[in-house]
Every structure is written in structure tokens, then in C-alpha cells.
Amino acid sequence: MKGESIKNLKKIKIRDNGESPVDFKKVCPKIIIGLIPRRLKKEKSLYARKTVTKMLKKAQRFLPKCYQFKIIDAWRPLKEQRKYYFQELKKLRKKHSNWSESPLKKELNKWVFPPDAGIPPAHCTGGAIDLTICYKNGRSLPMEGKKAKLSPKILKNRQLLKNIMEKVGFTHYSLEWWHFSYGDSGWALRKNRKTAIYGQIHLNL
Image (cartoon, rainbow, N blue to C red; front, top):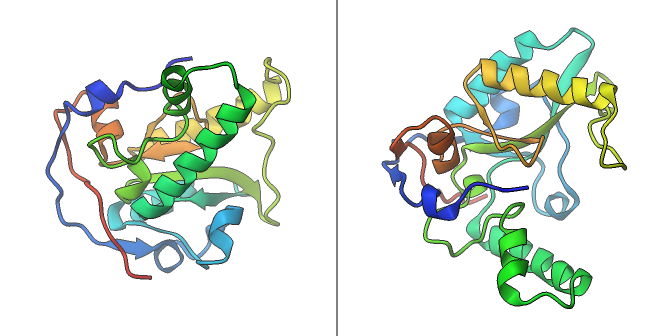
């Protein structure tokens, strides 16, 4: 499976529109925040650009009444992105001890954007979110399969998420069913735009 070429992403110009990031809970109080383990000690909520939070609020209208969105990750500081990247690289080295450094990084870059590629990772712009669909009690719909061949139920759930998110203007990163973005370089590339409207941002939490 191929990810998006960093070379092509670097061709996208970034002209940040200066839009502020906001707390998801303030704009979308009904959305469930399902923080990933590495975030639990530091934060109680997640942040994204204001337009991104408003788009997700709009997307809620298209969910069946028994469902809700659960956000797993959104904006990340570059420091955390760097730490996460090298943690995953270490795991990959252990798993593929016979691989040289170049193919290791090429594989990892599909799933975790390198922190020093010359362009900001999507999650560092406030334009990318990782999310799933869950029931009102917080239990997630099945989206992951243990086998290479996914069941019709899982495929249907993934397609529901993708259809709704794209309907309100997000674009989907094809290798990760959970990753959607607006305004960043990945979004611009998928939309055949020459310019992204979100660059790297910093937050003092």
C-alpha cells in the first residue's frame, strides 16, 4: 500500500489563514472525546481549527440517531509528533531487524508523518482529526478486522464514516480509515489545490 508522497506534499504552498484553534467540547458538546492513552495524562479535551470543529458539528446531522462521533486525536504539538514517530520507528526496527534504515522509514512514513520533513505534519496544523463512530453509550462500532479481508459489516461502517465526513468537506487519507482533514497540505493534495490554508500552530495548554 502506498501513502501520499512527501515530495508531492512539499509542492503544496502553505498560506495560513490565521484561524484560531478551539476546544472541541465548546463547539461540539455532544461529541465524545476518546483520548488515546498517551494523551490522557496531559489533556482532558482535544483541539482543532475552528472551521474543523464546526464542520464536524454539521457532520453530526448526517449520523443515524443511535450513533455519535468519538474523536481519538486532533491537534498535536510537534514535540509529541516527534516523540511518537521515533517510538514507532523503534518498534518497527525490532519487528524488521533485517531491514535497512531507508525501507524502515519509508514504511513508517505511511502511517506516522515524519516531524522533520520540511512541512508540518497534518496533526500539527489543527486541520486533521482521527475519529470513529460509536453508540450513545460510547461503545465504538466495529471498524477494524483481525484478518486481511474485512467483513461486510466493517466495510459498511467505514464507508458510512467516510461518506459523512466527505459530505461536509473533509478529505480522507486512504491508508487510515480514521484520518480526515481539512485545510492542511494533505487536504490540498487530495483536492488538487496548489495551496493549503493551515500551517503548523502552537498552543499553550
